[in-house]
Length: 148
Image (tube, rainbow, N blue to C red; front, side, top):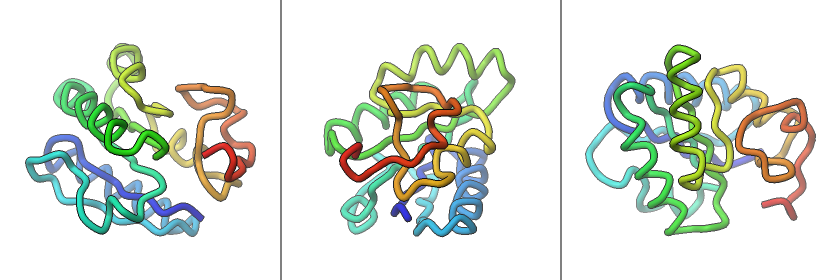
């Protein structure tokens, strides 16, 4: 399974959901590390070297700008790494934030834990299928190493 680093975009609320994602992914067999909610670029050191996937956790109303900045920074540092952005909030906030952030280099944008789970279900490594930036039934298909 994938090696994943979960990064809270801004604060302890983002970190709490990142820890929930970590627990879910560990039950699915992924190797997961969650970074603490601290200032900085969010990913450095050994975690950055081993991560195949970065999962950024952000509440829409408070951390969308920081999440967008993290996506851009992570994309610059490793264009091949998969970036999944979890945007938490009510459906209309998530839809608006998804439109603003997705073009900023997130491969997949999810709005619920169920959608996050579907990115990893039945796959060795998550990734968008056909260049999609939001989850769909196709994301549940197996993704080969060539897709990374």
